[in-house]
Image (cartoon, rainbow, N blue to C red):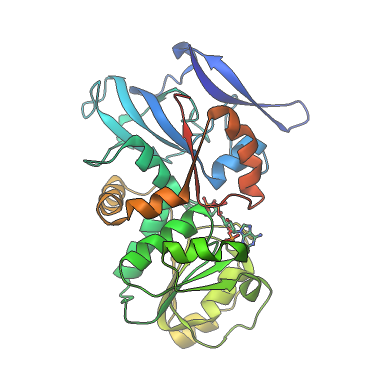
Length: 329
Ligand code: NDP
């Protein structure tokens, strides 16, 4: 038997979340690698699944948890054998395939990537999908030619998981990062991660003009809605905006003016179905280039039981940085 968070649907359509004891016969049959999970995380999407606030869960009952790191117990996949250490991010795990907020999981070997040399499961989950997505955004800015001496980078949702790690990565690479936050009380924290300046997110969250004063050479946006529209409207000629999230909203109330008059590029970032080679490249850079001291200040460790309440906190924007779940506690 092992412990897991189990989600089920109530008769009225709401989600029931509880800690449960499961056995291996309850793990999905469509998996070729059985693993023990050392650490998982609570991402924004896990918050949506556990609270039922958005319909991210597609099969019931479900174990949530889009991220996991640990050790292979048993495998019929040619690339994986017992004792191998892995990272899992996304692929619909925790949405339509039982996930990693559990001490055990059965996954597809094609979804796993090797834990980078020298990295622990704990560090991998401190980064998690949020940090790996932040790296995909930062790499996209570089690929689009945004140079560290080319102007400022705006990071929205700055105190969240994606935002915090994006600040650490980009400032570590020498960019001047401006952090937009609703928690000005976290200014010292954001500066300790490397933000050169902190602005109030109210400057960006209300409806704005289609073209505004040019400021940003690049943007990492995890917020969407008016914030993304204003960020695009303030991006300099030829600049790049990466969009990965919807913490303010799924809408994008913008005009085409910045694209056709300033050549601004809007790059969508998806971590869930990203190809394996891209994941391995991102994780390799995270292992080598993310300051471990900064990562430690970003991370808070909780238990599986705590995760049930923390799911509500993350959706309420009350969580700073990253929540990691120790499965052995
Ligand atoms: P967090 O909850 O950790 O961070 C989100 C941050 O957004 C909050 O901390 C807060 O930061 C800000 N925020 C919250 N509510 C609002 C609001 N109403 N208006 C403006 N800002 C708000 O989540 P993550 O960092 O894990 O994820 C961020 C987003 O990115 C989510 O929408 C998530 O679904 C998405 N995501 C997408 C991925 C992909 O593959 N595309 C992968 C990972 C995440 P502050 O208080 O500092 O303003």
